Image (cartoon, rainbow, N blue to C red; front, top):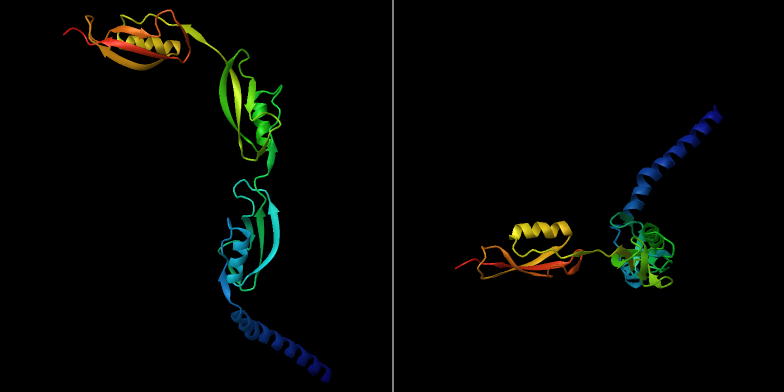
Length: 234
């Protein structure tokens, strides 16, 4: 029985100690530690971020570096703990700083289809802007600006010159036609009616009396046309 009472006393003392720690001591310690809202450091410079953390009573921890297309070199791009969560004063904060965009080399386009070259640009972190140049081999990459081998910041734009076969038509005779009929003829040939002017004349109102380019002239598809219409008889 003495042994049992001794064991029971030990267990009771242990449970009492746990009770005191969990419900009396720990709450007192927790209340003594000030809780603050984690500031947002994203986009700040290294020195400014450290100063802000110090003002909040937080400690700066490990610093990491990584490339970033969004933030310039030396700016904070990530933090742990994340912004706007509650932390205790004295918390150690880890930050990741930008190494800048990083560099990329413009790949060679020789022997590549347009889609393949665009994919190659994307893989090295460059963007493409397609532009048309006229030539014989339609669909091939004629050139790129800056050229292959150029060293650029990632995210930079490369102009990709893609060949389109040059097409021409002979300018039809539009003089004597009404405006809507002339417009239909131009549309069917891939020509653009850029301007319509009016001039007094003997013909019925709305009749084409002058055109430019003139009849039988060689005009590139997509070319612009100017028409002059008569105002009709007074």
